[in-house]
Length: 323
Ligand code: DGY
Image 1 (cartoon, rainbow, N blue to C red):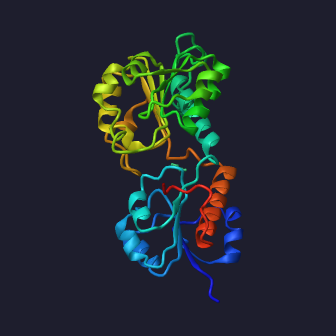
Image 2: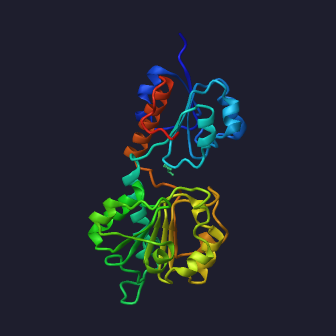
Image 3: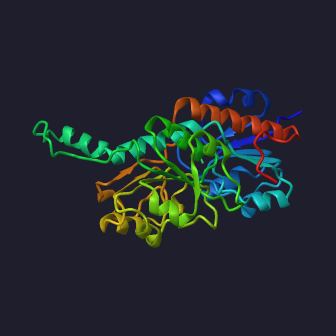
C-alpha cells in the first residue's frame, strides 16, 4: 500500500518531523524561501496533506489545486493566511500551532520593549562606531519600565503571558475588553489587571503591546487617530501581525512625536517596510522572529506533524481550527 503524500512548503526543524517521516511520503521544498504560488499549486496536486507557513495562502484556489487533500497544518499560531470557512465548507480540517510558542513570543515582546525604552540598539551602535566619548550624565537617557502602565491589546495566550511577566516590574496592567465581553480572570486575579475600553487603554498606557489576531476588525486598528490618543511618551510593541498597524501612519506618528517609540517584529507588507521606518532611531525593527528559538521552532514542527498525522488517520487534530 502506498504511503500518503505530504508536502512541506519550506525546510522545518528535523527534530519535529521524524514521526511523520516514518508514516508518509514527504515531499519537501528544500529552498529556504516561500514557494511561488504556481510552484505551490503544482506541488499539492496529488498531496494528501500539507504543512505550510504563514506566507502560503490557503484558500479556495489552493483547495481546488489539491483534490486529494485530507488536511492542512499551519506552522504558525496565527492563521490569517487560511480561509477556515472555505476549508470547513469542503470538510477539510485545518490546524495551527498554539501554546508551544507563547512564552518565546512574549519574551521577545519584552525584549523589544526594553530595547526601545532603554535605547539598546541605538547605543550598541554608538559603541560599535567607536564614537563613545566615555560616561556622561546627560547621555542616552531612556524611559523607566518599572511602575509604568502596560496596555495589552489582545489578551489571549501570548498577551496574557506578556502581562504575567510584568510582575517583576510592578506595572499596572490594562487590557482591552474582548469583542465578546469575556473577562480575563487570570490577568485580573494574578496582576490585578483592569479591563478597559480602547480609548482608555490608549490614553493611559505607557507601553502598548499588540497580541491580537489579524481579522477584518483589527486591520489598521492603529492608525493616526489612535496614535494621537496615545501619550506622547508611549511606546508601541507589535509581535502579532503587521497589518494591525497602519505603517505609514506609524512613521508619521513617530516623526511628529505622537508617540515616542515602537518595537516591531512584524510588518504590514513583509518582507518590506514602510518608507521612512528604517531611518527612525526610535524604532527597533526585527525580522519576524517572535517564535525563533530552537526549542520553540522544534515544538511547532512536532505539533504541526502531530496535527497532520491525526488528520491523515481521520481523527480530530489536537489543535483544530475548524469550528
Ligand atoms: C505565528 O506563529 O503566527 C508566528 O507569526 C510565527 O511563528
